[in-house]
Amino acid sequence: MFVLEAPPAQPDSPSATPASRPRLRRAGRAAVPYLYLLPALAFLVVWTYRPLVQAVELSMYSWNLLPTSPAEPVGTANYRRLLELPSFRDSLVRTAVLIGGLLPFTVLLPLALALLGRRVGARARTVYQALIFTPFLVAPVAAAAVWRWLLHPGGGAVDRLLGSGRNWVYDATTAHPVIIAITGWQLLGFATLVVAAGLAGINPDYDEAARVDGASSGQIRRWITLPLLTPTLLFLVLTTVLLTPTLTFPLIDAMTQGGPAQATTNVYYLLWDYAFHSFDAGLGAAAGVLLFGGFAVIAGVLVRLSEKVSFHDD
Image (tube, rainbow, N blue to C red; front, side, top):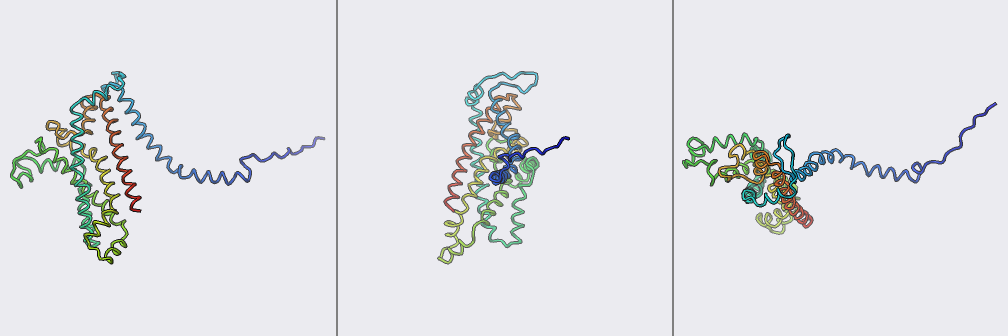
């Protein structure tokens, strides 16, 4: 007669010991935030870092975007050729002028409008902010069509008002200021709401304490409100530097196509022109890589400055 005996008990594995269980739980809790971030990181890799690496690779080739034409490796020749082109250097100057011309619309005027909005009642303030924000909701192409009609020589509302007879859009001396003014008109509402949000985040106890000490309204704005609002203003400067050359692309393409005589061709529009008008993908990619590197340095400086100011305020 056979008797079945139970197998000897196996010792618990090290991973199942009571001493290791708290470590596993701590590791699981520590991994939870990264699991929430994983989808965003995956999209960031797919839609940002992978195209950036591909752009760097493409900048090392000469290719006319035709599938039947093979890409020829040229090393750093595209970068050397790009830096020697006068059009590229001129576009950098126009981009700097564009950013400088937009800063009053994205920093100074929003600051003034937001400070004036504090004097408006609560209900009227909502209408006030909505009216200022409305141009930001207008599609750039639609805004370009409307402004071309308003600026049309001979029959436009602006020409009838001023009686100048000037072709504002196709005059090399006025085309770039027109692009700056329309872009600033659209961004003004967004920047005003950002400044208003920054003002709302300032503790009102600072103002009350200053008034108790005998400070005037102007002194409070100069020595309390503006220093505490500096991180918000630096954020608007950073946004202007990084985004406005991109936001002007639909306006330029719909109104001037970079003209007249390349008067409105900034570095973003020139990048597109190299790649999709001249069919020089390598040169366009090289311009994009240099542009990314330059703006990354500027953004790093502004972010570092903003962190120092925020730390000082705290």
